[in-house]
Length: 347
Image (cartoon, rainbow, N blue to C red; front, side, top):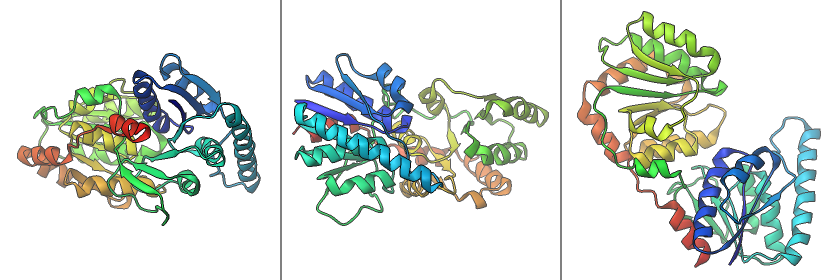
């Protein structure tokens, strides 16, 4: 079977797409992957052997400038026309889109030629690009059991989960270390609030047994390391975590934002967490709420995420290891997303 995989311009779209591409290739299907220039190298490095690669001219439509928005729509329109012509010659049996505006042209072209099309939504609230593309799609596959904002239509909605890398699957269900270890996943400009609140909260705790692994932006590493040291807190501050699966598995509690990949990785391994959604991102709020609903942790608005609240919460959790264990058990969610997606596509 010839299967076309269309993916958007961020790693959050690309990694799940590549996992599915690898699985489909292993099953003997011919895979073509399309994306825009932002992730071209990432796709080439991770694509399965023998897969074809197609560059799509596209960019996000979220710019504030009306001119930039019109230019982005023009690029998507041109790419949609080009793929429509390409599908006249190379007609795939299936098209699978993983979100982002770069996936819209392939979905449109598939609709023109009546090719069965599948769309995957990462977040617990449907994104703008996917919401736009749904008019041409018969099956929507989701990362979360319930997704808000799905237009009322005849589209089938199938809960598959979100594919994660193999190292997360290997760590699935591992026992909590039970060593009072806290992981803070920052590292971006949008996570500045974590750098401001977490060190102050931890420093105020009477329990100095907590060991903190804190990911932050490069320019903040030295400052935070010095703050932790001055306040008698054992900590490892770094700008990048190469083995994120190992870092999550080695933590008793995680504090971070609530992007779809982060939430699903926590659920795959089974770790309790305090999630602070990015205020301007409704997708993250929906993801955090879905995670908290399982009983695996807390979803707290950024305006309420204060050092006082966090200090009280950390003290209560680390003084009651059995509660952390119960939260970890509730957070744990089996991840068979790759096989479920591949089965759905090829059945």
